Length: 288
Length: 322
Image 1: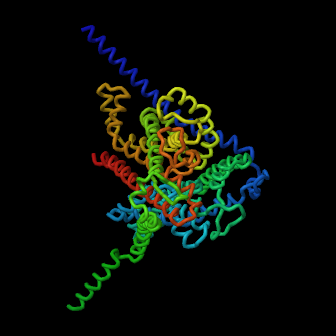
Image 2: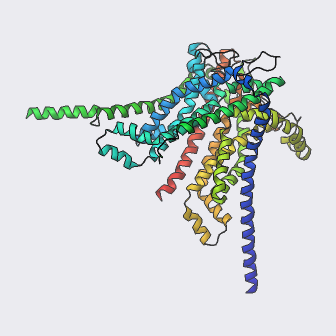
Image 3: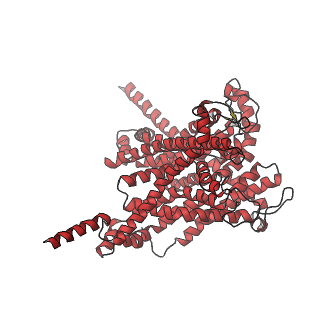
């Protein structure tokens, strides 16, 4: 009897200890997952900050061999590219999301929902290839437009899904209140449902834009890159990410340094985007 | 009499074309429908464009494209086998390393962490997913690769050099660097989906286990078993991301079409071939072969993602119906 008690006690402690060890391991895994993040931020900031000055934002890249210079054209280029992308991705994303949540309870809605999910998994380089065959080949030269279209396609799934999710969060009673007042459904959707959900939708838009700002692969053979100042959408255009790629591969120490600075500026730009949206979306009324 | 019939017919006619009584509603619905249709058509158009673009290469190489192991642009011979090999091996190895970590982190976030720690930790993990791929590559070139060259590879070949996987010159750029960087990149994706899946398992499952005297770990095992299909889906999504990952891999993998057992040797992935050689492709056949590579990548990722979504969805529905 006593022996049995001892045995079960032993079993009990062993199981307790196993549990403790396994739970501690999960904590260690969580800490380990953060290490690369810390390292990447540490290197980007510490290496990037040396070249971070006013020149970087206002000057043009210097030719090989001359140090200094900036990436004004690339910063503007990135903004133009995500602008074109947004002009395509935002309306398509929001309208498709609205369709899916308001009218999409049918087979077609199911298929579109599935395809948006699939689209979000397609590698960005493949989208670049498609933009190449669809835009660059007919136009016969690389252009900001082709790059922007590629980015726009990449934004669609993110914006569609967030729009749908956010509209679904709007309580049914709001819709019913609108309809009960005799407002037609389309007006209810636009002025009540979308208005209530717009903060969430804006978050999705921001997410899409900031992801697009960080894309490189679809720009390599669409927007190509440009060492000169260009704001024309029919011409090749520079972007921060393509500069980072080119400069990181180059054998020049100076360019490698600038790649780090460009990376830091890119991260700052993405953070700025999210800050901007947070300020815009801080409404007087608390939604949800 | 005839008057009323004609009015009815008129109504039917209107109903057919304007199903809701309000013209505005009809227009609005059709307008949003058009946008949804455009997404539908876009995916089809993408496949069609790449099919058209790769026709020349398909006609010349046919099925050989996938099994021939020679990728030689000078001779105009395009066999993608070493590239497909490099893609799959680098992604699979990255998944094997990332999976236990991801599940560990997800379990910590969903089951163990106190609420005040869970939020910031989740945020940090999601931040990791938000870093642009090219910055991973930059970090890879200047930090990870030198570290692998001076520390990791000499150590591995010293201790485990009898295995064919750890032989060769410690060059830094190669499969090992790609695997490590992919591991870091897929970890946040698998983690965040696994965490969501674990959270969707009802509390009662855990409470039942605990009430029967199970420890926290034992109840976690039960939850993990419940979440099996969701975790599999998360893993497949990570796999889809890994095979399509372009910039970071291109920058560290060494870029040579080579089938070698050694992790130290350079390799190539489908995405990095396209990124590296597309602008250099001067002949029509070369371009066509690269587009065909994109088509193969497209088909694989669609397949992997579709399967993954179905798994995650089935998991969602499982708990919603009960």
